[in-house]
View 1: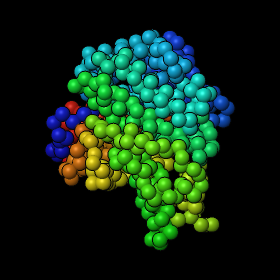
View 2: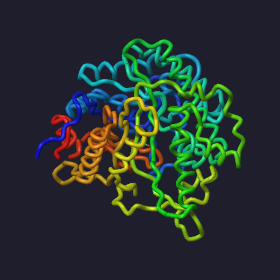
View 3: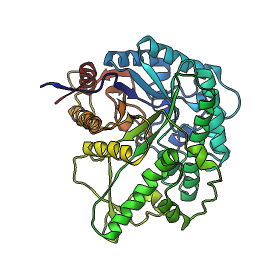
View 4: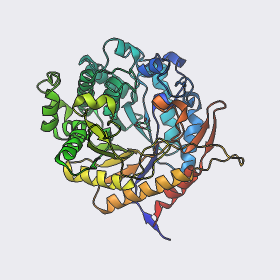
Length: 461
Ligand code: FCB
């Protein structure tokens, strides 16, 4: 069979996040983040683990970059740990923390790998949570200061900067659903947090742009769960509209259009004041961007609720006007996390974004699957399900390009198994297996599959 090639220069990469891989939580002046506090709180993490050791990437980064080079990857998306760079969240920079990222980036560049930095992948310094965290407006300005300071320190090392990873997770999952740090269950606070995160994004980009050099590029990563309406009544359609509103359009519209969706504002006004949205905020949030990071895992099939509707959709978000919505299923095969495998949803999402918004170039900054990987008697890790998953999603991405989407790169989640938030070490998303006790790294079959794809510049078909 011939290879269906991606466009010349397409960016093949991998992705990770600081708290999930670095370990070394007390090394070189790092102070606790909300995730240290949360993961050490009994009952919060499924398998009782925490990020204290994770992949010890802080001390093993050179070997990890060698793995990326072996893979043939040309990009590496990672996040900067705020509690390493500015341990108190405010005030002085910690030079040792910055040095780590300089060493990492130097090593990447020595292998021809372009660094792609995310400012905030959820590890808020605990000191800032103690001062109110994202529900207070000041947090957006603390973030702006951190963004300015990190850029000043690393601007000559890193060209591509994204502000936030998945703001829905650091707001609703964290302050309403309670599944993520700091584990609050306060929907009104979560809504304020979502706005302050977006304001922080706008402030950061505004600042960066004002001091940037010609090579710098700026953007954001947003995760989307396109909603599939699984019923045909008016009530089903309204349920789908509300879920789409609060999970997707609430984040996209301000960033890409400079406005919150009117229908969602009307829904929300029924249960909380919206006075945290101040005059001028939306102009700040609506910044020109050079890159849009899409994280795609699956779609959200929903229908109207009712006494017999089954499981309620995302419990904690329900107070945001979706309390009656039920989770449904498209009947597709699922991963070990129970997430539907839906590559057609990726095509749909990419095309919908392109048709709906005035999009900057799109990069898939995360996409992947968890499986119960084991080291076999042959010492290898055979993960055929992940290979199949990746292949199907690469094909979907290729199709989207054919159908007119300006897609520039693809970073599967994740380079290696890591501390998967509330699921701890028990949920493995990596293309490299981590033995957490010995810290041995074993490339899985999917690593070799991806290496072949990168070398060939595409998938068979
Ligand atoms: C995303 C996160 C990432 C990882 C994957 C599985 O929501 O951004 O850190 O946990 O899910």
